[in-house]
Length: 359
Image (cartoon, rainbow, N blue to C red; front, side, top):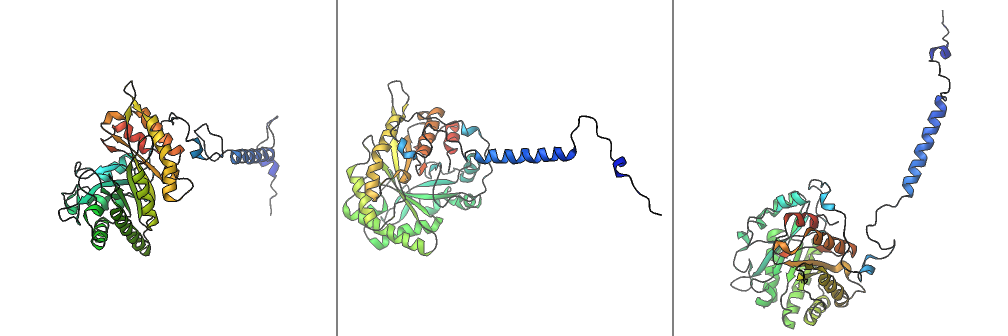
């Protein structure tokens, strides 16, 4: 015998003043929809500068280098896992493999969430056509470079710097083009480098410039054929008036010879104010002066994205944490290629702030 069930009696009685469940559900759904629509209307990112939305970052280049950023160095950093970008970006520390042979690339990368390093300096060895660290130490003799495999396994990468203060740049010492190409190729192949930098202290004569340019163009064609494009930068000294005329001519001749220059790394000394503080205004002025010069040399209307900035430190006291924040803001606000330092090692707190620059 079937038994009829009184379902209205099975439900607990609704207390007086309580809205029906159907009405509650409808109100909840409406709230979710309205909230989602409001979030959709919000801007996708917060603009930290005072520039109007839509204004190109480099349009603010005339403003003083006083913009500060929030303390991004205090934000938690994820473990180093994603692969490094195809070319240097963010903060790119320079490692002197001769002066600091025990530098731990992987530890530094994990500690500050770094992706790229530059290792130097490779200059001409005894016979002129053999690259050596600091002009003395054979390629295999640098423990730092020997740790590149571990760095890449952890998601980072490093490039090689040719030239610099110790010894002659290979193109100056090695006058045979085929041997010069072989020397660069040998060093790149030994360390699997896809980024190389040339720190040219003197522009050199026309033959040297064209010999280096021909070598770079050849190596870049070979790299493209292998599916691994070669990024090339030049590290050049800069002053308040920008680059020297010789360096501008060298860049133009190198480009016209078929070499692709990804970035010009401006090596800027830190001057002091009358109160002993770092004069970052002089660095900003130097970058602004060099920008149109680099654009003309590379045949482009503007070159902010082709500029990397490298303050030259005489000691860790050269930059305070406040200075570091200003440098990060200037680099990010003008969309420079990357930021680095050379000379002395920044203080730990300063290094963490520099490392927090957006990539």
